[in-house]
Length: 259
Image 1 (cartoon, one colour):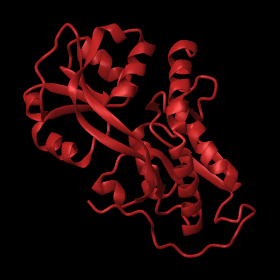
Image 2 (image 1 turned 90 degrees about the vertical axis):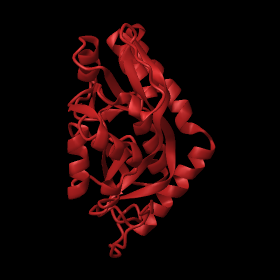
Image 3 (image 1 turned 120 degrees about the horizontal axis):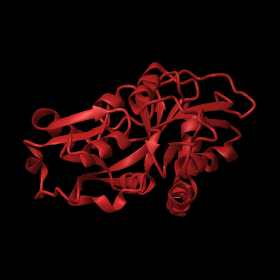
Image 4 (image 1 turned 180 degrees about the vertical axis):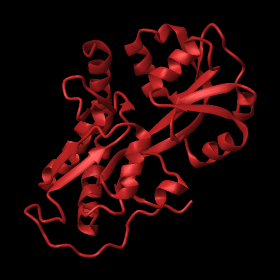
């Protein structure tokens, strides 16, 4: 699949930062701890490892960052499509999203997605066809990679819900057979819910996808100069393994401190 990295945009007047804008309005999946989540202390904002990582990327560029809670993951994608946010902090690549977002290389990380099942009701899983005839659940408008998304659309029964907690509780109550969610995020969500010992992630993962920052094509911040500066900072921090350090820090914070 061809990835659109840069859009052809008009040259905009410089601001105090030297780029097309001084403030970057960002949002992402609010159901994504330890990468992003909504804190009770600041319900209008998102916190997490990716929020901290983004500030380290953009801070040296002289641009202010606002990582806002815009509601569900489906709504965040719609706002990016409309240009009402500048940047999505964490998205897999799909052909639909390429139509309205410019992805920035390198990916911040790669995430495996697993089939989560109650330990009391496991089933044999080796590859995608083993999910046929079973009822699954995940977030509305969630993607797990273009190939799996298409296979699921054509062959599987997966109910989209607003929060991943709802999916896990539905599986716990035997209303669905499995939950599709990333391995890292699923584990910390279950630990926070206090039911981690009741679920298991089946192997192998259904997919392993790169997670990217992506600019809205309609954002005034989406200039060639800013993207290049952003990419340079991202690459330097990626070489240092900085996001992994933050993931470890925020995993402990989410599971042990935030109750």
